[in-house]
Length: 358
Image (cartoon, rainbow, N blue to C red; front, side):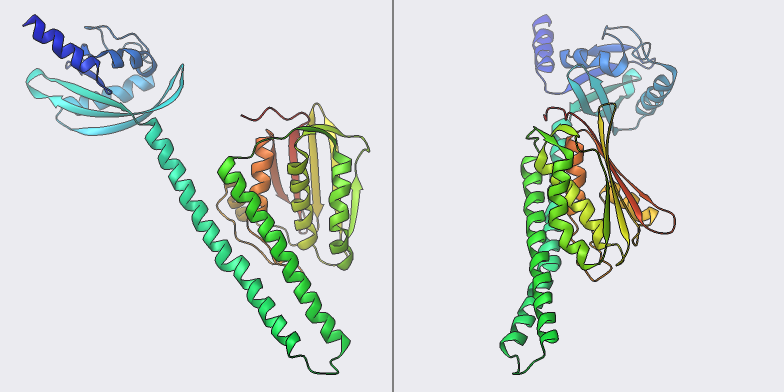
């Protein structure tokens, strides 16, 4: 009999699931070695036969588990998912309870489903990425290509003696569509790369003012075409230890959005500063602004829908999402707040020296 008992104990100790049995007073009757390892993290005490399993818990947790155990002892068979903090990190544990009517107790089987939940989350993210990619390809890229085909048809069949103003209008439309496609493809490739590899920092010592001047040189023609005055408030020396390409992308996207959504003849204020080891970059415009609900959706990553600028400029739904990813990987954050009378303040806050990427 003792040999059979020893064999059975070896079997349950070798299980990939934790097992334990309780009596009607929640005393521990028996368990396997895996439960002994998890017991301190779940119930706050070492697993010892005969002791009350809830004795090491605070009042709120004790009440919770007491109700669970009473339900199982009363005859219910059910499952429960709990997140547990251990020395090796967080675990997602699935408890399956079965009543033991003849003993007025319960038996519980506990499975570590952490990897399954992580893979499920990764799968859901992959599905969302696929859907977003199809939406982008199906709408944001296809529409300007169709428009280009139409414009090229008009140019091929252009009548003699067409006035220069009309011809220049066609050329401007083609230029706008090509610029949009270039930005869209660049954003799409950046986003796809960040989803595949996760953004990794390539840190360098850079001057924030130099990066900003490079971005301004690219956006100056767009601002001049709308008569928008970009006013800069920045020290000449703002040393940072960050990823310069990510910083330039964030500046270019946020400042480009401000130009796109600002009416002609208005001004945009750009402020850069260093304080207590933090770098702040602010873009303040007097454009169409954003509703609080849209800001909340943007922060939570729900809304990626593009909008049309004040002169019909086309938007692309991935730019701000990438900005959030790039700022986050630096250990920073982006805040959006509407201004009085319309407009938007976008503030980026990152450490002067970015942390090493994991």
